[in-house]
Image (cartoon, rainbow, N blue to C red):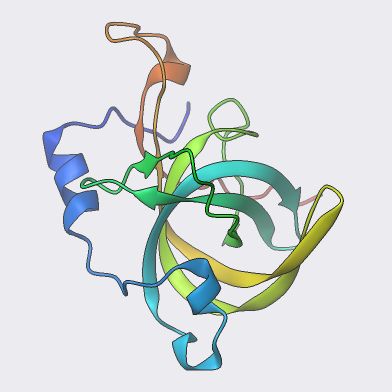
Length: 156
């Protein structure tokens, strides 16, 4: 069973009204912003397993009114890592999945992107909201959107 639910008006309202610092990832790397709560939107660029769970490298997008990613012709050229204990269903969170991350800035890391990279913030995920780009009326499970909970990592 997947740990997701269909987003309804109440769930998107929760996302819209979350209190968070108005920072971009470029601003968040300053030491004075450590520990601040953010709500950032974007797309998963890469997922990597860690000894405690998973870290997602996110390509940052400007947020719309409900916290959704708004892709514009002018790229932000900003990235961040969002980490959690456990893992997400790989059918629901994979490369290019649009998400909104709510969490706290815990530090910085070098984020490599293809032929380059830069220092970006690391965020401990409090909530992950998955957006769907499926057509209205499509009821397949991968078209459902809403808050996802990470699954526990099985001990080997």
